[in-house]
Image 1 (tube, rainbow, N blue to C red):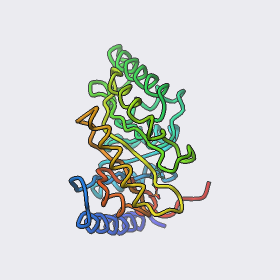
Image 2: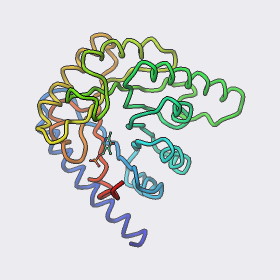
Image 3: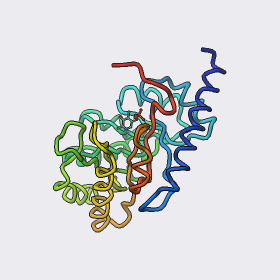
Image 4: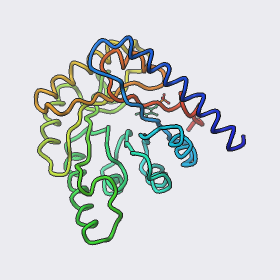
Length: 245
Ligand SMILES: *Cc1c(COP(=O)(O)O)cnc(C)c1O
């Protein structure tokens, strides 16, 4: 496929996703839209990120640090969201390029990311690293909630949500923005996203500014928007099918 063909393909896919999102907004039951679109570019090259930026995409999501940090260096013009399970040893790297981490799922990650942001700021002051998005602004954090009663797709149990929210609030260098979830596999996503909306209201009692709900992927963005999504994370719907692996 030539570079121009790829640009055309991405433009067509993106137009379709934008149409679906506009239609979904008409069916929104809670919250205020429109939801922001995060293009999930995992497995696709930085060249595609730049093509999407030309098509008006300003927010990009990735789920693995090694891949994300390399692409972020090639396409610093977009805002990078880290959406995958994050190993503690990767926090120093992630704070250099990501504006937002969607997958806060344990206390040790809260304290680790806080420490990494503060260390990053010292390195910026010493002139050792590029400023990145977190030199002055706090790292935006979403707590990932497990909606299927298992830890299979990541996230904290709903009962632990408030405690983790308080920990993020208390951590210097982090800013609590809201909640994130992935709908359980093979089930109707509506009840899951309704539960996520209700849990987001619990968090907002502790932290009124934490209003984001990161929910909805290619297959279920309509249900997510119905239940108050503020940020949808769409990969294959825009980029095409990912290579298996
Ligand atoms: C890959 C991924 C997405 C995008 O999934 P699609 O089905 O390709 O839209 C969204 N959220 C997370 C956490 C992901 O890992």
